[in-house]
Image 1 (cartoon, rainbow, N blue to C red):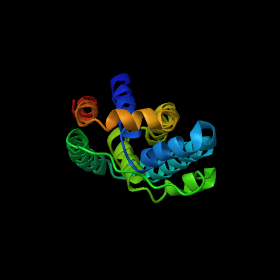
Image 2: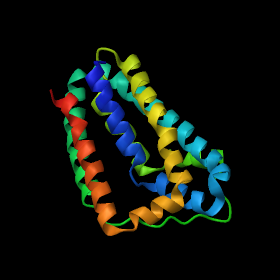
Image 3: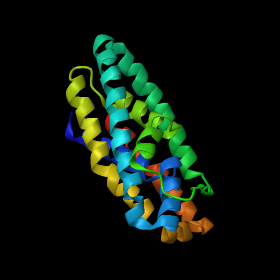
Length: 197
C-alpha cells in the first residue's frame, strides 16, 4: 500500500473513530458516570471487538476482491459516495444525543459483542475494506487497515471516556459543535484524495 494511501487511511480511521457514534456516546456517559478506570474494560472491548469485526469483514471481502477485481472499483465508488454522505452528515450535525447507561459500565464482553450489531462499526469496516484494500495484495492490505484502526481506536475512545464531562460541556455550545463537525466533515472528505488519484 503506498504511503499516501496509508496516511489517508489513518485519517479516515481517526475521523470515523473520534466522531460521535453509539460507542463514543456510551463511553462519554460512562466516563461521566463511572470514571475513567471503571470504563477501561468497555474501551478495551470496543477496540478488540471492532478489530475482530474489521478482520472478519476484510478477509471475506479481500478474498472476494481478489476473485473479482472489478468489484473493487464498484466498492470504491460506493465507498466514496458513502464517505461524502457521512462527511455531509458530520459537517451539518447540530446536536449530540445523550446516551443512556445503566447502573454499571459495560463489561469487556458486552462492549466487544456490541461491535457486531453496531451499524457504525459495520459501515466503518465495510467502507475501509472496500476503499483501502487492494486486489493484488488482499491479506497485507487487510492487515494494514486493521493496523491503522488499531493505532487510532483506543486513543480515540479514551478521549471520549477520559474527558466526557469536559467534552460534553465543550460541545454543548452550538458554535463550538458546529466548528468541530465542519472540521471533521472536511477531514473525512480529505481522506478521499489518495483513493481518487
